[in-house]
Length: 318
Image (cartoon, rainbow, N blue to C red):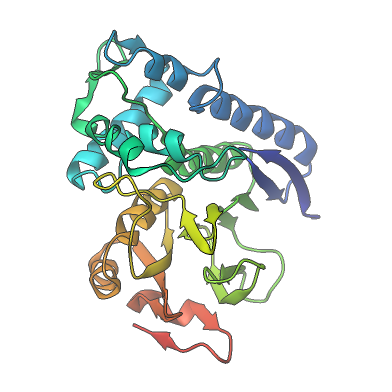
């Protein structure tokens, strides 16, 4: 059976869906409509979105939202509390100030940043399970679900494809990828996923990862960036400072069953020291990872080493 490919642009990303199914065109149409609906409702910039309605009502009133969005916000809020704000969907005031990845990106001054730091506490996201309502309790607060939404979208697409009888395919939402079943090419049935070099800006790779029926999520300093003079600022922010996370790590690749887990842990581990992040990966159940440091060291968790092949000049650590 032939493999069919469908591509479009969404969320500023090149989206690619690849499936092995005789009714691929119809499935692709439904999948694209579904993800465009998610993106519109979950957007922090679309005036018609439910998230914008929540943000505009900050400090004033609760907003009832659809159950799927409510559930995602609850996951994000709870992870934020569990990680002391390292993972933080209340980071909106800072991301809106910097606008990294958009044409209006800027380097704010210290005073501008400091005025936002009191509005980033995930504990001030008040949820009502009965009403499915969300209340941001302080004026100036704003949700930004960009740190978690693509993983959620990818997981929902995977479920949709399986319900349609798709048993082989790939969902590629930028640096968030899911493989479904076995690849048609290759004798081992594995999919080959390139490991990007986060220290270059010209599409170079450090090696490849073999995977099957898993999610691969990458957080990297060159995924979205702002250049001011000779300095680059990435899009992963520290809620304690309002600046991009200062870390020895240049990228985190998480391999897991669910893409949403990859979104969470690629962000959380990005702020850790490399050896501490590796220790966590080696102890975690069902989650493996690849860390690339700013010294271009490639550190691979123990159970993933036999699935990673690096370029000849790159040494694998772990």
